[in-house]
Image 1: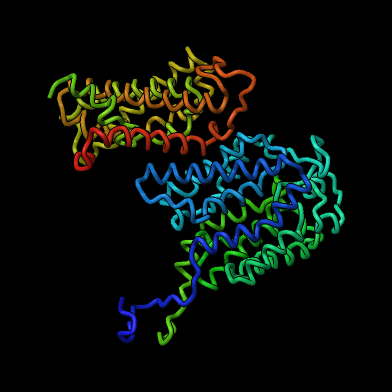
Image 2: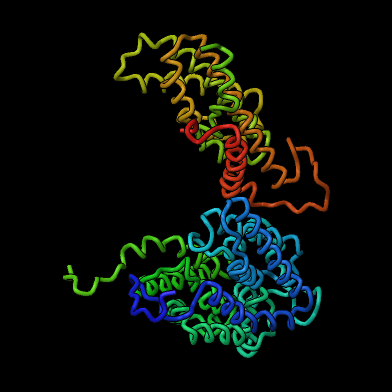
Length: 308
Length: 203
């Protein structure tokens, strides 16, 4: 309308690129694809059904919750889909579909919409869904399937390590020939997705680096095999996809270091001294809780302000 | 002010659980089954009634400055009676509720009703109020207990109502389940109520 009529200067911030919630979310979906495809290849069609069930349920419950709250329905922005895929990635491959439905509804409604929708939730919704399922159905949620063979149970590499002291070869962990939840089978697939997000600048390298680094340092100090602990379980998925959620992690740079280091220490404590073989879920969820206070105390000095 | 009105307000309009949000501690701790919820509700109702009557009668005798300790002594007496009666006649339930029976003493619902109602009103109104609050508290606890028992065990009052196909939702009988169930039920009740009550009346 005012084209050619001189300069128009709006107030800051001046948005210079075309990033939007929708664009970022669909890029995250793209980054998750390698892990999901590999999961379907490894565990068969049921894994695909789990992914589809979670996605459909997430979109439906997001739309329902937003209708009930009387706000604009925004299921096209992809955030519900990302939550659904992240939740699906954390589920065991032979989980009954109705359990996935329950988990997704809890993730979207109790994990996200109750707090006021996208941007207002304190905890990563997908992790809330998984925590709910783990507390509700501990047997179903820890029944793992042997890769490439249907209906044969096998413990996860971390379970084998903790209970029987058996180490799984690095190559299996890397390429995805181990049992575990959908998204944790292959370190390679997770790395591809994670590096893509780093390259696009949608996640901050500080959180994965401090999280993984803390785990490696403490595992080495404690005399454990750091490479094994890096590759096994959902640590890489956690570091790249769950711990980097924009809403539930600190916004300050210093805060992100604190977040990653704290999560790393919690993970080592749970894996080595705790009762569970895996602790990525609780390490991130517990640190999510501290984000408001971390942000409060790590506000950087404003340029020009005199340091105290 | 009528006796019926003082009784009825505790059932819904000023329900101690769903509106006043008092007595959350026993509510969250013992409503994992319907029987526990009912037993805790009845014990609390008894103490409410006894404490309400005695505190109402003593309101002119108790010096104002030391009224809270005096109320507590009266309430503790009735809690001890409830504790012993339950131990004698319902040992199983008493064992399940355990520490939470003596803890009725510090249930803020009971002290709250003594402080804000029983000692401000004649004894027959105090009785009416205590009965209403007691019944309101009991039904709320039993209701939560039923919901949590169905999800957590597939039964109601110990009778199996859901078949073998049912997988128990263990979280329902854990402390987290108490908060979740309470929050969801409260949200539903608030939605039901907001149709009939305007925002201004809620405050």
